[in-house]
Image (cartoon, rainbow, N blue to C red; front, side):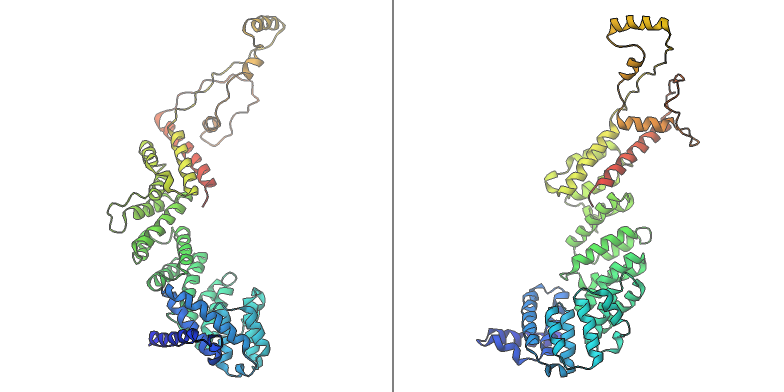
Length: 449
């Protein structure tokens, strides 16, 4: 029924636009008729009919012109006054709304509501919240109440998220299957993430994918969904994530998993990154994928501390750099540098030097030694020792800290330094792992998200 009405209205509008007197076509229609037509077109767009977007633009132009030409008597019809407010909240021109309200003949309650809408449209959220506070959207006609519930829910999302979710549910109840419901679900997903409400996040995400996956605004949902999977990884199972993405087409599912894998790898969530990389590479049926270089990169990042470093380096070496974005090429370079650093042989510690007491007799001996070697005695010899690499210094410092957590010996001590006992295999492995994790943290901490 709704689609039939939409087609009839669209046909009427297109016929009017096609006439020589098209400049006056909107004058033959009441504002509420134009706004209702606009809503029907927007509902089609929300469910994936992108071909209707040019018609939306034309309808916005026609409605704007009609409202600018309307006089005070036009708004004595409550349908036209409500249409004016709905037009503003549907993406209309705030200047047109404000000018029309100034001419409208309406009761004080309706004018107060209109001023609250104008505050919202002009970016004055504090004034809008205060004005809308006593207004119950469920007590208004459904066409206006749905939009006001959506607006109030959006305004309260940060300060009163629980109340915002109630209002967004009311918006959906008043206007199911419309652009209002699409926007309410999209905002609900983002608020659930901020609230750490995994159950609400999963439910709203499922409902959105079922109904509005092909909306032109679905990219905003995808941003919130990826952020939610990362933020709620401890309370939402991978099986639940797989259930939600299974409702997507293959290409959208792959993109979602690639984005999850990248964020998880950067945040050090290795299990989640490995899961998402595998799903991006093999798909829901587990068959071999197309060797997407992004999936290979993110899966390699997730296994840097667990897989054979030779295998990781081999995988990184197979990645086609030309297929990566600049940010991912930077990640690839960092991963390869780390893999090379981990397998590099440890730096050889410089031999310990025993301080020599300086006496008058030794000074003359030292002078002779300086003549023979070209270096001054003792102090000069210490100064000429080769400096250890920064990584080696860090490992040496950790090795010098006692197991009980004591501080390393002071560098000011003059006691001879005893040669370190060779570490056993377990200690050596632990030292390598600590070094590896430190390097990975350095890489991921500087990686662009």
